[in-house]
Length: 318
Image (cartoon, rainbow, N blue to C red):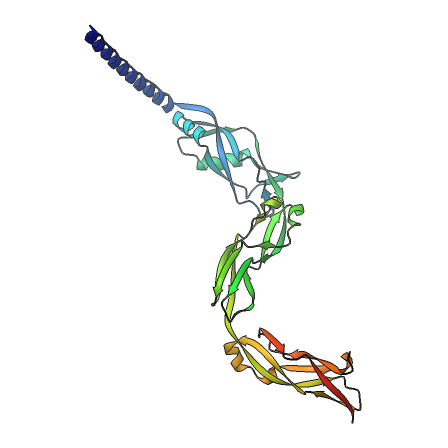
């Protein structure tokens, strides 16, 4: 008896599975038939703006969806509902009236029709005018500040300042926003044990926290010339200035030693005559000493150090 019930149970389960399979196939056939039909309805499109005039800026929070009535198959409507199609709108010919910027429905329609597939017909737009969330902006150039932590190898120096290209960039935005920007920094970067010339492309830090500001340049190149240095001593005669008429000023000593730090190759070409030091009798603050000042040195040496900064003197009548 139990075996008979078990047999009937298996038959019923098999019939149920066959029924459900036919039901599913029937539903799929019906759904495919319906989705293959052509309908007229509204669909949303994701807007991508391009060719925005330099004098205008698009609000970051602007609506990026456009609704239009189209004629398309059910499959296409299903695709649009799952993932709206992107439509590129060219704003190069945007019109302005009383501070508002817009495109006519015909302009938008022509642009959309060129981008929709042949199987989709654009019936109508929701409004005769398509307003854009554009607003007029100001321009400003700000310097770029390289934010580099540079550690040079031993006995190496940076020849001149870091070079930034471009050294300033243009920013665009509302006047009240860009007026807050004095400079813009690169993202932090670190270089260690540098012994050769270097060049790095660095991104600029974001200004998003200051409002709707657009940075025209996203990256800059930072470079530097690194040279190996050494030191060399030069003995220089001391010149005098503003000596009273009828007198002669003698200093003790009349020569001093200076230490010049420069690139090794450059040091080979330096001469004593490339440097000049002097004392100024008009700058006398102590009856016993005159302070030595450096008057002349080559522009591209790293440093010049006087081994002494004052001398004794005697004013002799001629």
